[in-house]
Image (tube, rainbow, N blue to C red; front, side, top):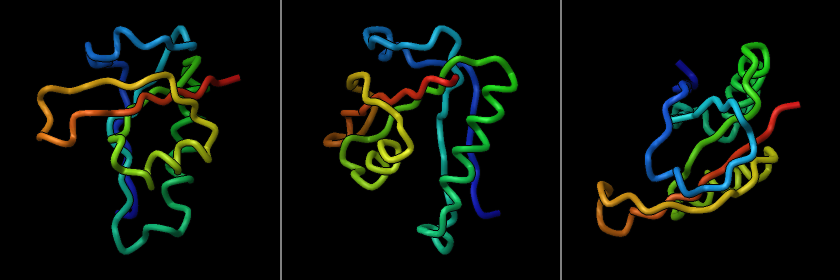
Length: 108
């Protein structure tokens, strides 16, 4: 397996205060690429396939959050035209890993 993504409609309650744009979102919970294949465009392919699926199913946006300390992941989503909508704090995460940036891409 080169890459995997987990998609559904479930949103964390911490996201309730975020000013989202899309009215019918699909949510990415995990997007992972096998370490030996990172940096080869696999993540981009998985993300774009997720966007196509979302459009086909009538979703108006894709939402996700990313750990604020993972600059590589945050930069990846920014390069794919995902916009920051705000940030959230998860008390359930380990100390120092509580702040997550919320991203969204609206689908035309």
